[in-house]
Image (cartoon, rainbow, N blue to C red):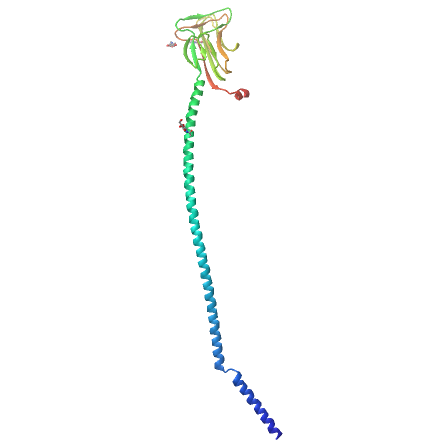
Length: 264
Ligand SMILES: *[C@@H]1O[C@H](CO)[C@@H](O)[C@H](O)[C@H]1NC(C)=O
Ligand SMILES: *[C@@H]1O[C@H](CO)[C@@H](O)[C@H](O)[C@H]1NC(C)=O
Ligand SMILES: *[C@@H]1O[C@H](CO)[C@@H](O)[C@H](O)[C@H]1NC(C)=O
């Protein structure tokens, strides 16, 4: 009897357990269905997630494009302004250049005028022979004698005075002078170029008979007002005729300024 009760209890427990399993658990079909649904759900979630991402990306791109468009528009405005500025600058530059050209040509013109004037000042050259129409000897004298070269070939700048035979420097500079003597023996012929009373170079010829001739030349630095002339030596003579044998010449090589004179 006690054993039977135990068996009954055991059986009841078993039924309970089975019942419980049937009620609360899931069968195989339900499980696979549930699994499928879940994976479906997950896929949908992924899709949604992806779609959301895509949407966000597109939104961002749209924003980017809007910003780009704005930037391009802005850039266009800036470009227009720049172009306008460049045009204005070009116009102004052209105007300035034209003005400068005008000034330059004006300057050039005035400079040319200045140079012409300066060159006129620099045009200094003379050349003369002793006798105008007569012929014969001058000298000998007992003392030195200043020669007047009266037959003037050239006297540009009028620095040479044919009445006195004296050249007066009109401006500071380097000058070249030359003297040629001609005569007949046996009396010697000797003439020197002088600067401000100082004897510098001599043309000298001496032989017992026939023609005598000699010449000499010198480059001098002259200050304004310095004088240059030729003096016949005492006890010598010089000859000239229409052939212009005996001459005195001089010309400015180039002008000198104060500092250039100091350098010497
Ligand atoms: C150039 O000279 C002309 C005439 O002498 C004058 O009318 C003009 O204004 C000058 N130009 C300049 C830029 O100085
Ligand atoms: C110049 O003098 C030299 C001698 O000193 C002589 O030989 C020559 O013939 C002279 N010339 C003239 C043109 O007198
Ligand atoms: C001497 O000079 C004069 C100019 O003053 C010239 O006419 C003449 O022909 C010259 N004489 C000779 C022979 O060269």
